[in-house]
Image 1 (tube, rainbow, N blue to C red):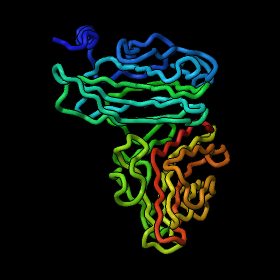
Image 2 (image 1 turned 180 degrees about the vertical axis):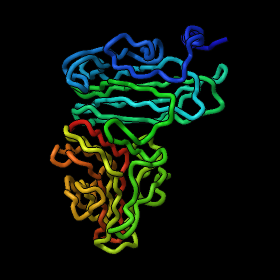
Image 3 (image 1 turned 120 degrees about the vertical axis):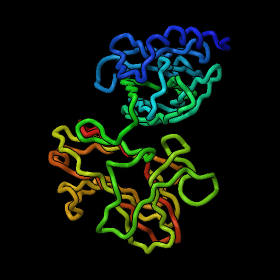
Length: 349
């Protein structure tokens, strides 16, 4: 006997049409794959047009605001899906902006018999800027469950005018890859990295992919950005000589006549932190032809920080590489880390 009547009803309705993915939902037509929760939240996601505008500058999207729903929560859930053998991948565009707008979480809810387990896979909280951001999350396989759902949950903050919005949710019954349309990429260090690598020549040591550690143990950030329990790219300056550097570079990116948008999260802490530089290699592989487009020097307090860079057409018209270089400072030790590196190669930010 089902404990939650809603789960029973949904299971009966969907069991005859179960599939392993939900495809793309852009909210321009009625969705058959995503639904507002009926019982576990305080309010519904609203279909909206205008004010924020969707990521194309027109059309519909889902929207919440602290102006009318201060401190409340809203849950959007996928249809019940059959668990794929190799895992799946969900991508979406989101906006979280304003003073204390709240948070947005992505969870996987698994159903085994009458038991329901929920696992948090992705989290963003606080102001993420006024632009739309792209996210992609790997849904790991689980051979012990036959069915699952994806949950998008937002708990709004207490600030005035805070906004949380969603658009273009794409749920695919295949594992995530690094590749995006038109040569772009997403690297969150949770799956095998194929779009970027340590440079083999011209630097002094390598960046290292590191798993989130227990608080107050070791060096580097305690948690990654993607899920809080995953991996990030790490550079420790301990034992290094001031001025030494390590470079992490993309594979050649296809040229774009519209420019590109590069976003990433960075962490810089400690007296030994020198400099983090982002460069574009307009001749693929040629460090001598590098053009610096962003840099940060010294320790930056406050944990992870988001950076977003518009790459003009002059840098993207022909094949190019994106390169991150960490340089050692004069102190005894320090840490630089990177996570969720995303290149949207279809237009500036």
